[in-house]
Image 1 (cartoon, one colour):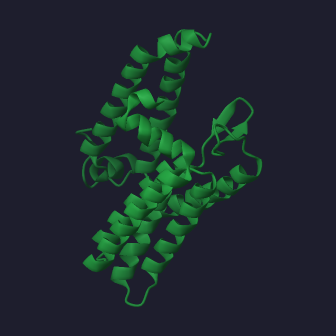
Image 2 (image 1 turned 90 degrees about the vertical axis):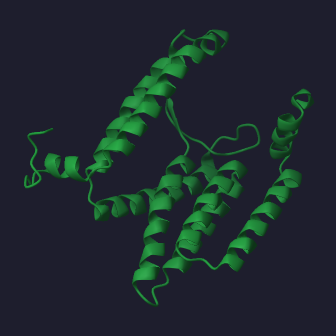
Image 3 (image 1 turned 30 degrees about the vertical axis):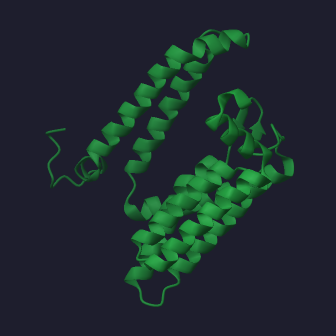
Length: 229
């Protein structure tokens, strides 16, 4: 890559001089570590289920390759391209989440997956990064343009996603999305009083989830007392 000068205006050169190489390397290391752990831990599970010894490991490597390819392609985009992609993915994923509620199979009391032949897809996994990028842009625009309702739009998108997740229900994913949104809102200049209010609401919602959803209560009970389940 030393032959790529800063004055070179090619796509590859612009990518090399603008991409966060350390971050990209860290993602690659984490992904490879996960693949090695899957190779070490998955064969006994595959054999117990009557599958090929490396069934899960081979699928992990396949999806890892696809994922890294997508990451590199996304890193080639301009900031505007990333924003447009995130908005498109968010809109598409939310429509798929509505479809999940209508036609998705119920598994252990939750409806989270869509089946496409031999492949299953969980739309909420795509919502997480897409909402984070989209909400970040709206929060930023609210600070850059006086009177721009970016905070309101970002909050509305979060509430719609949270509602779809709770209808599945997927309390864990809802908490992850809520935490990301709350941190973004705080960094965007949310008053400390409202931060405390959101924190209190988050705590009350967690307690409510424990008493409302049986699978949440079972997981919490098993965490504190493994013999409980």
